Length: 142
Image 1 (tube, helix red, strand yellow):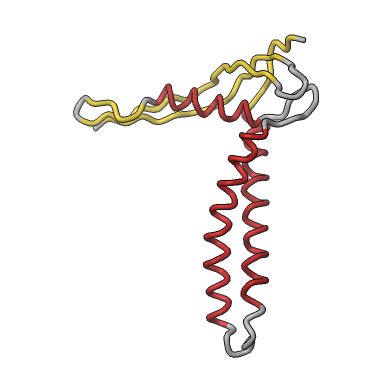
Image 2 (tube, helix red, strand yellow):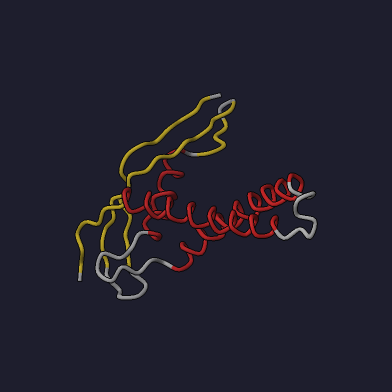
């Protein structure tokens, strides 16, 4: 079994869906690959290129600041998925811990909802911050 890694800048063509600006983006990225008994299960270079393309689609346009809606929706869906799991875990725990002092069960949904919102907001902010740091635009063509 061999593990391969690709680390460095990937160059991706970028086109804003709102204003039409065309540029080349340099994306700091990485990828890992796995080879078992001579059979490649994943390619590190290909994974790095795909990750760079995803990051470039999520980066704000240097001209108008627009982000690709499908890429942003993907980030929000991942955050919502993790948020639902966290909200259920925290909500059930609060319901169990406070079932005697909260017989009507009003605390658990409130805490669960707050947990969901906090997880989605945090994950989205961290992902967008990461993309802002990883993507630099070069050769902007008007």
